[in-house]
Image 1: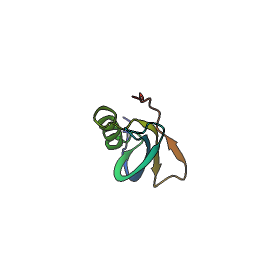
Image 2: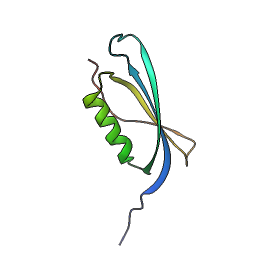
Image 3: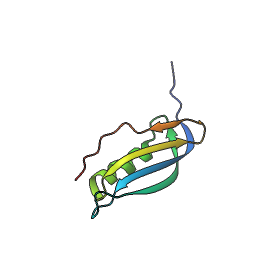
Image 4: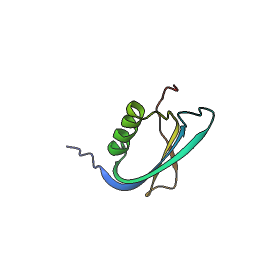
Length: 81
């Protein structure tokens, strides 16, 4: 019987998004939270909420994991208004 362990880690999300009124300009939002690796359910929920409810369309989103020195690019597609 195999068990999948979901390790908790301190993760930082860097969101680069377009300003709603000035679609040629981008801004940056950084958020830090504890989440479970490898799927990051809290961060996924946050990005889904942003995509559905916030006017600033996401250009890029990155997840930095405290336990690893590598950059993880979020594999998602967001529509630009």
